[in-house]
Image (spheres, rainbow, N blue to C red):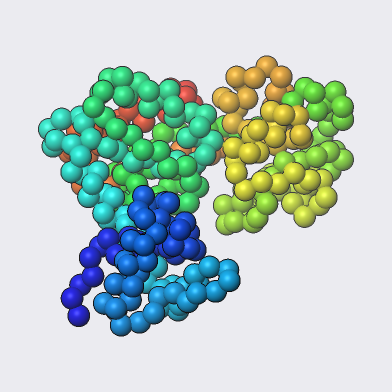
Length: 303
């Protein structure tokens, strides 16, 4: 069997993600007949069906689901190849892909990235907002800003420092509901939290309850506003929905946000990481150093 062209796998992945030929065509910038031909050609090359037609759209076969992670890996590699080829080796030009959480990406990084591009006008930046640990070794991202230390080997990692978190509420919320005098009184308020329990969330709640046994358990009804996005939670705090954890540096930007228990705080260790093979390429090194410097300024960390 001849190896199928990468474009066939690219189209296959597009159909998997979209669930239809028309959706994949829109996402890939192709015509629907072209997408159909690509799928047919890949099925002929593999000797097996990849999709079955149904009223709900195209349903992937077991083989298609088994091939999906390999197609995703091919997509990441092809994207990384394009980024690597986009710049001259000795110039700060070309594209760098950065991964960070949504709050850091929206609230903290934009001025840092603006300074980088002002200093290096031929530098292109891509920002992926995700709490998932994108694999730097597979080049799903070139540089990552993380709140937990990356564990992969062959990475250049810089510990920036600690980001302080506190429990905050908007003045409007406190005017309506009153200010809790203790952590135990939080059970009579609206607490903003996550809509699912991940390992990170369980560890954070465990740390909170170890230090403050009176802190309400996440199963209690007072956790009445939940979202899977830190950014959505921050917006809810700012809108006066309830009480939630917020970075103290971000809260300081809004005089209406009140730190309810200044003596009670959490810290998020902050890291910048990239594959060590990239450190000699100017655009990666300059971006890495710019992120480190900008984040140190943000959290007030010593250099």
